[in-house]
Image 1: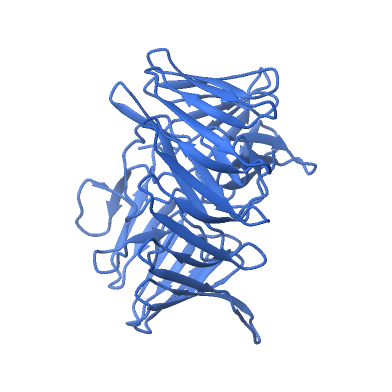
Image 2 (image 1 turned 60 degrees about the vertical axis):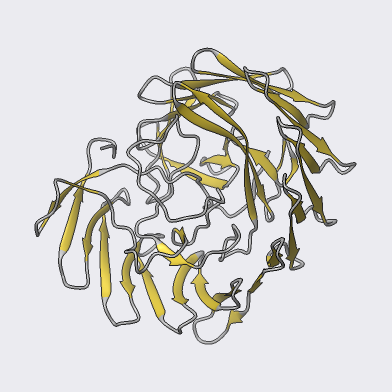
Length: 419
C-alpha cells in the first residue's frame, strides 16, 4: 500500500518533550522550546514546510507526554511559522486534508481516538478506499536503495541505514530511532519513549508506552486488521466486505460505526453510534467535493486539474480561495496566495518545500533562512528589522535561541532526547 502524499507530512499530534534549560540570563529551572508570543500567535500554527494533517485548530501546545502510546510521528517544528487560519490545507502543495475521529476510546482515564485521514494528493488506497487511511494504517517497506520507508496516513518518511550497527536514521530534525530486532521485527522509538513495533513484513503489530499501556494489533490471513486489543483486555473489532473495504468497527461496550461505499469503492457515508450520518461526494478523480456533517451542514471544495485546492466554502457561504502562481526571475520561487474568509490576502513564498517568506495582509514581511541541506530554520528576519537565530546539534535538536536583544537561551537533553 503506497502513500505518495507530501513526503514530510508526518505527524499528527503536538507531543513534545520538556527540556532542561541553561541560560546566559536568569530563567526558571525548566524551559520548553519557544513558541510565538501572544501578539505573533495566529489561530493556526504550522511547522516550516509542513501542514497540519490532524485538522486540529488552535495554537500548538507543549505536553510532557501524549495521553496514550502515541501513534503520530513527531515533526521537527522548532521554531514554528505563524500562518493564517484556513481549512486544513498544505500551503506549499495545495493538498487538502481532512481528519475525523469516529470513536473515542476511554480506559484508565486515558483517551484514544480512532481517526480517518483524507489527503487529496495521495495515491493511497487503504481500508476506506481511495485517498483515505486510518490511525493504524502504518507500514514499513524496504526500498531498492536500502532505505526503509515508513508510510503513514500523513505521508512517507525515509530512514537510512548506518554502517556497523542496526540503527537507521530519520531525516535531520526528526527525533526518531528505527532498529531491526534479533527476531526480524523493527522497533520505532519516539522521544517520549513510546515504541511502535512492526513485524518482518512491515505490518504495525504493537504500540507501547513507558507507562506499560499498549495496543496489540491482530490481522487476518488476508492481512486485514481485525482486532486491536488495548488496556484492560478491551477489544476494538473491525469488519470488512468481500473486497476488503472496512464496513464496521465496534468497541467493547457495543458502540458501532458503519461505513458505506459507492460503486467506485469510495467512502460516501459514515453512520455514528447515535445513528447520525455524515456524507461525502467526489469528482471523477476521487477528489472530495463536499462533506455534509452530522448536523446536516455542507462544506464544498473545488480543485485545480492537478488536485490542489482552489476554493472552500462553509455552510454560511464564507469562501477561502487559493492561487499558486510561480514567481519567475533569476531565482524562481513558488508562491501561494491565500484569501481568507474576510477577503484578506496572505502571500506565502516557498522553495524546495520550505517557507521562505510570509507577507501578511498589512504588507509586513517575515523571512526565513535554513541550515544548509535541512528544513531547520537558522534565522528569522521580522518586518521591524529585528531577527532571531537558532542553533541545533547534529541530530537536529534545538540547542540555542538568540533573541532580538542578543539574549541566549540554551537547551540540554537527557539520553535519547527525553526529559
